[in-house]
Image (cartoon, rainbow, N blue to C red; front, side):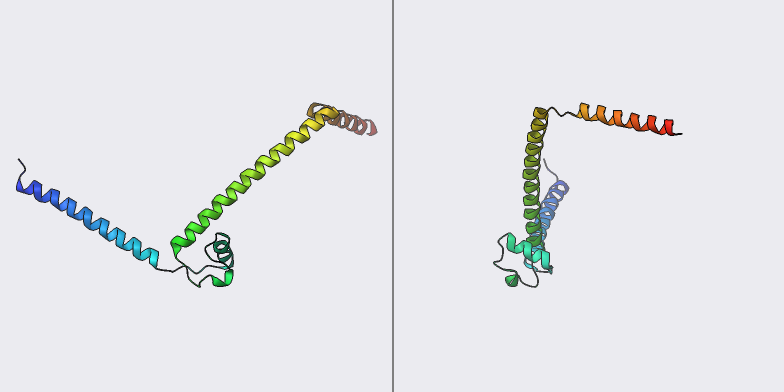
Length: 130
């Protein structure tokens, strides 16, 4: 059987949780409706590129912080995807270039041996000149 003090404690926790949820949802709604961020030129262009506004002139003087964060996150994702694509293209170009060099008979080992040969010749020439 539940005692009176246990019942009051359980109801108190439930009531406080409901109150916290209501307070949190109200402040979140208020936070979304407040337009307190003044976008600069780049941020205005980002809002236009994301399709939120049709032109830079239509962007208001103040926008919501949540809206600006969503815009930045979308641009961050797009930039990351573009960089992934460019990396894949660069890797493909390097593979093609390496295969062409192998057909010509070029290799890193040969280049290294030639460099050491030239370096040793220069070093021996410098010691003979003394």
